[in-house]
Length: 473
Image 1 (cartoon, rainbow, N blue to C red):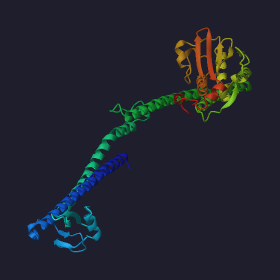
Image 2 (image 1 turned 180 degrees about the vertical axis):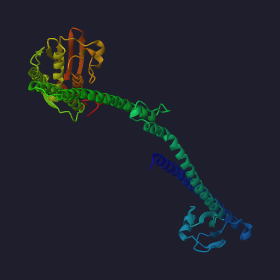
Image 3 (image 1 turned 135 degrees about the horizontal axis):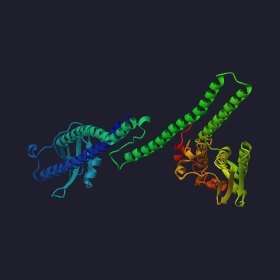
Image 4 (image 1 turned 45 degrees about the vertical axis):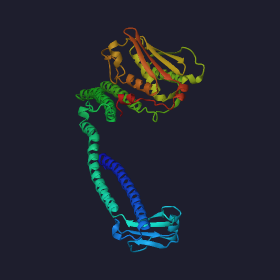
């Protein structure tokens, strides 16, 4: 059932119920009015008859106006019939108890079917107490009541029909902006993801819904563009070593060569394979960092000092000419100040990338790593005395596959800093950079320690912007 039909039914049911209650109330109140009016007529009929009977004696039946199917009877205090006018078939609703109530000064009223009876007490000029009972059928009153019932019934059905049509038109008008939003949304695809929804009414809930949907499209567009860029750069980076390998193999196969020549060719191929492995590992780490949601990110205590020593040892073992100095500005008061909650391997990858970049882009291949401790926070700075980063490149160095013109002569793929920033972000940390051309670069990382992580355990570890910044793989 569509919302339009559901709204129409609910609107019709509500208004129909109100009209039904109104019609029943009108019918009931009119019936009460008819009954009270007819009681007055019966009382007047009974008093007039007994008064004339007491004044002039017997009254010819044709001398008084007659009600429909009426009977008027006058009794004395002993219950004897003194006068009777009219004749009613069936049981007559007058009992000794009824007469006693009338004699006591009451005016009892009885209704049996359509016949209504009332009794009145009358004291004659001679102080004689008489009881006059008038009974009749309100032909005209019931006829009007039946007519009113018919009018209310057909009027209710007509109003219900009109309300159903009006409700359908009302629901259609109310849902027209929704239909327009659906039509606009159906036209948005990967080829025109830049399009946005527009709502004519700018100050209602549908406008808010369209705004929220447009914000979602903004995030999707960023993710889509980022994904296309990611796939394009990854394909290019993977194609380059594969092309080199294929060329080397083809050249080697052109003629018979010596064992030394084959070993040289194989060494070159091995270097390209290692280059591809580093690239693939970087892509896998980047994809893993993209899944850094609170429910997926491992939460284990990690000592940053031990982690930095391990990263230093691993990098020096890989590159023996690299020099990495780790200094403490001051020792923390508590051991927990050195501990952060997070994924050890991801954090180690982040610091390895920072150390390796500092050594790679420095003539002396040396970096200095310093730890500083602040309330509920650990600060790590990685400084080098290298070439520096041009100011126009600073805003883009954390983009995947971005490499400035000054770094094209140095081997790399432009993944390390993008991966590092993502890892720091999903650990609720921050990273910023300061660089001066010809003097060096300093990366500053701030991470909440274990105490701060415990106080904010219920907060999210990554924002929606972090999720959509790079595509998931």
